[in-house]
Image (cartoon, rainbow, N blue to C red; front, side):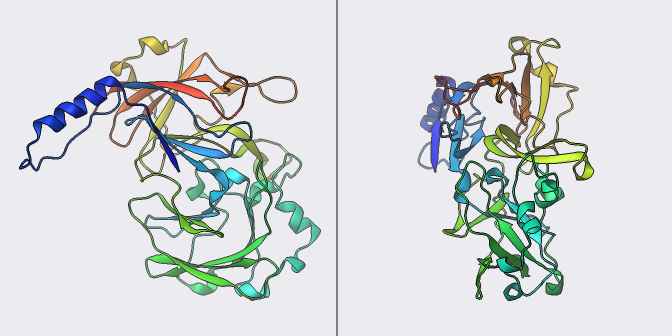
Length: 352
């Protein structure tokens, strides 16, 4: 995990001043003010976009994590919910069985297998993914019941979108007091492993990898505001269930709806980025429930006939968990023509 710091001179000098004013007997904590402005080159990892980059505007930092480093995310709030890794195009199917040893890859039909491929040619893929905009509102794995008999076995595709495909898994999750127990095995195995997973209230999710166990992925619950990643998104598609097609998209921007961040798009023709000040934030309708309200809207083009470019007629206003308000403008999609290295600038317009 890598962190990059882009503190402004103002923030650094303020921190030094506070440190020098505290004596050895002074118990008062050092309070570093939020970063006032900065420029960030997002560490998406390059042309194959292997990373998710979590950005904390108040510190001017980012944390880059390999998209394929995790498989399941266990919610830490009062509900018992588990997400699959949409950043790799992961998908899952309920089997109707509660005995994990009764499930095998051999029991899957060709249609079952085809359903777990995320592509523009799979109209029912939307029925096998978490809701990309608000995963906890509609996860593909049903909320884990206090009654073990209600918790099904799922076949899990770990995703093959810009990552190497891995063998299918079978998983079953039950409650373990205030935590979880995960039962898992390769889909054709006759024995399974179990691991207990405790909730951690400092995090939005506890992440699990089949190779590495419990791992660090997101920073702390409110320690990031926006994240750049590739991942599962949706688009209108009349012949798909609910008229929605699930597909894989590069250059998505999530904002941290589960950690208290909010976002809103502003048109340059309404008020120019350079002119936007604190008072202009009054009356804006900040979105706190759709983490893809920025999503792919910050860029245009991309595909067989056009290269992606930044939209120059929009920017975004981000409110973090501490009520600091930033304006954010994306500057580029690529660096020297290479994808996976976009850049943005940000400026504090209101400090709590």
